[in-house]
Image 1 (tube, rainbow, N blue to C red):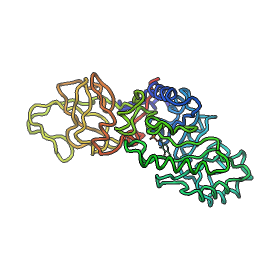
Image 2: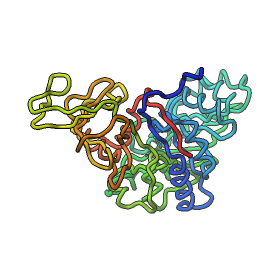
Image 3: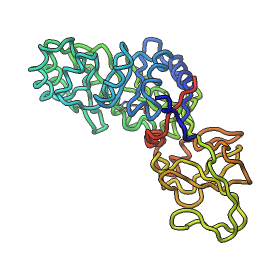
Image 4: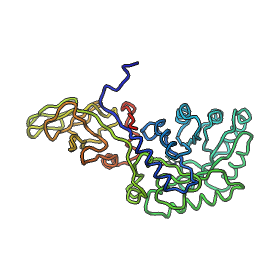
Length: 372
Ligand SMILES: *Cc1c(COP(=O)(O)O)cnc(C)c1O
């Protein structure tokens, strides 16, 4: 339908060149035989899974990782060849689909494998699995050598191949390394205890791939920095190369008016003008993920900061303009304008959370448009 275009001016602009540069810089930073697994779970942290996957693969990634069967199947519809690993637990009845569509599964349970044993002889193609070791994250995975060996034995099935083994760090983004070292030692010991090393051993997330030297193994799982964001302020200060944020959020003024002393703005009439003020309205709100807790956040207009006034509404927000402006004036909620920039970290600090949450919370109502 021709009418299916974006009429509302609110949009997320994804800079694909930034993603390409983040991957090719990582490629140069890593040993040449280490695979880059681009982590594109949660619709590529809100950036758009397919477009990000295509660019990451072109720039040097050789594998993809997602969180759920649904995400894997979505990616497989568009990307025919690259291996896709599902990082989370999956139900037994997904195994035949995983085998059919060349989707690699994370496995850590003998019971799971015993149930899959009944299905495996009918698989169209061999099922690839990566064993998961819980070396201290306390999430999913085997915790002891005994458990690992039991799972490894149970995986010796027709049509099932133990292709990899991995673990996940809880503190790789922190300066303190004791817990990280402990996890690394535990993981190495467990891997070494296997009768045969699986093809791909991997442990590093973004933080470990960027700031820890000896943890590259055969592959690294590159998530947050693929998008140009630092996993933590500590990593931000120790980056081996500059990251380029890919995501900006922008809209336009749809109404501009002058208020006089005593006039109020928004639900609850919580904001009251103290003098003659120019107030602009932008068509974006908490239904887009610009949640009410962002009250007091500033946005950029003509390179100047304009604070939110009054409560954030479901679909609209009012901002105090530095001067009279025209309808149609561009407003940047995240990104650069003039000499200033509003980073996702600024939003995250205001919301007392981590930068990961920001692109994930911006809802599908915001169209993602791509800049090549
Ligand atoms: C999400 C996730 C990653 C990616 O982590 P980043 O910090 O974004 O690089 C890597 N491994 C696992 C198991 C994950 O769940």
